[in-house]
Length: 461
Image (cartoon, rainbow, N blue to C red; front, top):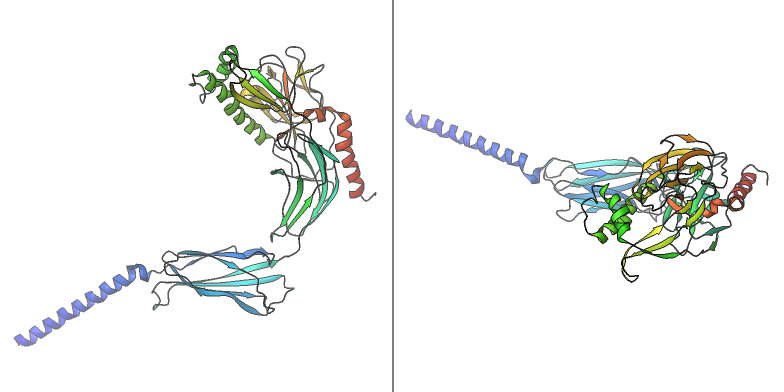
């Protein structure tokens, strides 16, 4: 009896040991990285466009490691394997490039394809088969480039000046449409009829050469680039050397520095001058650029402005585009530099400033070196700003009419005497105010372009 009880006890202990061993093995399998159960990821939109020229991109990833993949392209009637293979051990992420097959298996006129993506990971789960994922991507085929035609444009553009272009652009799947000029992007506004657009563009005064082109891309990334023909003219811009006197630094410069915590603790004179004349100036101009970069997306039926004449009997005291060098003690000791990106006019102290054209006030506050500064949006990306005002008589959001008094001249900001700093911007770029002072220039290079375009768009030519 003792032997039998001993055998039973031994058998029971063995069973317990075996069970514990099985549980330990199961626990190991369940928690070990090589037996992980997370399926690999397939990153791609469910519905995409393709021009069949640029490869499609499909991103695969797995938390432990990818093993193999297969790509099957189908036109609905026939299918072809366009990619398959295995990954190097330890590969956790891979972007596959899918090219349209050179084989003629698929219908070349098909406008819709599907791409089936299958991927497995290196896990030993599922009886060593690993985890797998599958995704079917719907593909819209479009290999035709957008259609772009210049309808009319200003014949000439000056360095630092403005110009107008009206053009046609259409594509069933149009995605992006813009004008690129000297690295700057200009947004066109829909004009008159669907498929037509108008845009003011600008040539930055500090750039010696200029070129502009309309760029249209569709959802499948087909691209059309159309050059806008312009004659170019390069006016001369002035260079000035200005003495930075102690009274100027201790007065205006110190006053501006003390009004802003960013500069208030700068004690060294020349450092303070540079901080206000350059750092603060760039910050103020960045705000101006931001405020003047918006263009409406609404259909524009027409656009016309009269010449700008903001200050009655105003006399010029500084020109646009002046490159200013500030020196201390002697001219060879240049301590700061800046560009004057407006046109300064002066008449009587605290003289009335008028908005020559209707528009919407987009800013009516203090802006650093520009002092009190209202800004007005006149449509089509054209903005005006009025710096150094003693008083602002409008508020942000106001709709002003042509001839409305919006402010009074002053010497706020970095102004030494009572005057108006008048600026004109085209989609965030400062341009020559003298062009917009000239009614004959506006008629020749703006109004006549619209007239010619209207005849073509309306079918009268």
